[in-house]
Length: 187
Image 1 (cartoon, rainbow, N blue to C red):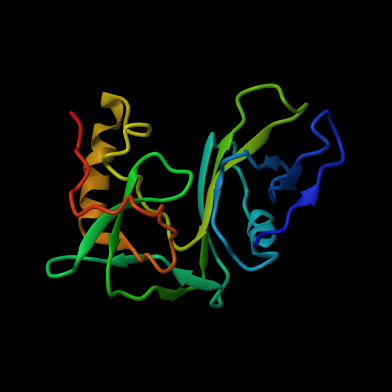
Image 2 (tube, helix red, strand yellow):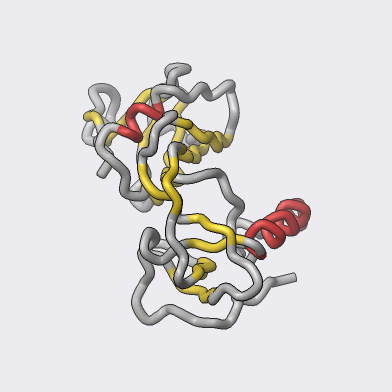
C-alpha cells in the first residue's frame, strides 16, 4: 500500500501529508479512494505533479515501466457486463466478466484544492489515485452529475462507459450488490 509521510507543521500535525513538485501541500481525506499500489509509487508520482494554480488536478504520471495492472478494459457487444457497488462508493460501477487487466505504466491522481482554512497555506485533498488512465465518472453518478452545466460531460461519460468496464479481479466489489440491470440515467 502507499506510504505517507508525517506532517510536521500546523494544527493538523497528526495527519499525513505530501508536497507537489510545485510546493503545495497534499493531504488525504478520511474516505479518499486511493487504490492499492506498490510502496513509494504514490510519493514519487505526487513529487512530479505541478499544480499550475488549478482548482482540480487530474494527472496521469507515466513511470516508463510496468507498475501494476489497469482495471479498465474495453467492453462491448458479446461481453458479459454487470454492475456492482465498490467499497466506500455511492453508485454502481460497470464490470465485465472473463477479461484480464492489462499491464500498465501509468498512475492517475485526482486532487481538489482545499476550500477551508485548515492549513496556513494552499493545499490539495486527494480524491482518488489508481493504476490506470484518466476516465469519466459513471454517468448515473448523481453526486457528480448534479447540474445542467455538466450535461455535455455526462454525454461524454455515457459514450466512454458504453464501451468500457472494470475487471472485478482488480476492483473490489461489495458482496451482494451485483446486478445485470444498468443503473437509471437520471434527467
